[in-house]
Amino acid sequence: MNNSPFSATEWNRIALQQQGLIQPALSLPALVQQLGYVQIDSINVVERAHHHVLHSRLSSYRPAMLEQAVQQAEVFEYWAHAAAYLPMADYRFSLYRKQQLKQGDKHWHQPDTGLMQQVLARITAEGPLKAADFGDDSRSRGSWWDWKPAKKALEQLFMHGDVMVKYRDNFHKVYDLTERVLPAQVNCDVPDDTAFARYLISRFLQAHGFGSVAQIGYLRKNSKTLLQPVLDQMCEQGETGSFTRQNKTYYFATKLSVPSPISNRVWLLNPFDNLLIQRDRIKQWFAFDYQIEVYVPAEKRRYGYYSLAVLWADSFAGRVDVKADRASKTLLLQRLTLEPAAYDSAGNVVSDFLAAFEHAVAGYARFNGCERWKLVACNDRKLKQHYRRLQVVS
Image (tube, rainbow, N blue to C red; front, side, top):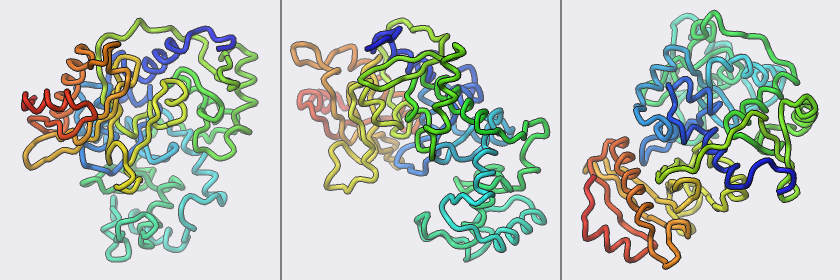
């Protein structure tokens, strides 16, 4: 690596440290603040993604804690690179996108201003409402592009900032006027381009330690034009440093420290985990070619519908497709695929890894309300036979 202050292994440890995986979080709001956002996803073959991401970093976490944080206005819902929970302290930076949308930028649908005014009038008069409260016109046929008019209007009002999600009822958004949800002391000054660029840079480096311009501006339009001059200025002023690797420039916060080698621990990371969501970055730095196969036709899947990444210390040692059989309270490991990092030089699965993996699976099973776990399939025949004999119960 050219002009880098740390080795590749040290950078990876830094990334894990900044992601809140090594040091336990002090609280849920502090964790969301550290990560910058937590992506929301509706898939529920196991506990939903946003809950899993928080559980991976806060062992005492329970879903009710997030609901409480929303109701106490410590976090709020809006759009990051996808639908997400964000720290309330960052609310003003959501206004940058809201202003763009009000000035004509398109999110998903063409706004129907007349219907939006009608929907807003009902919420103003009646209080918090969800899409189902608007009758047949708001019922979805199951896909976001099939949304009925009132639901589209609600989402446009949400994206424009006129309403916020006050809470969720069985995962359905319940909307209220922003002025009735937002705490009075929250800063509502709309940031200019420079302030917004600094926000994106500082939040990314806080959460990941280092990144390229493309990574910092992930899935944001015209991000390089916005970010590059501010990054150059921050480097000149000593706020950030930079180094090159494989002909790519990376930027980093200047006050980083390298954590000690990580002890024998396994994390089962969600497909939408903040560490994993930029697949190219994980491939480049951790040599782990990871893809979520939810959107891949069943016959073309290699690892399974909902495969968690298996992180062992600072290396990815495999992936495991999971499903909670809630009727029998059994966590099914439908397919465990181990990577070379899980093996010793003689080709045997490392016993320390196996012990840490079992501990992680047991904890994840409990988090999903399961009393036991069962390995169904594995790419290591000996390991599959081993677990079949044990009939593992956590």
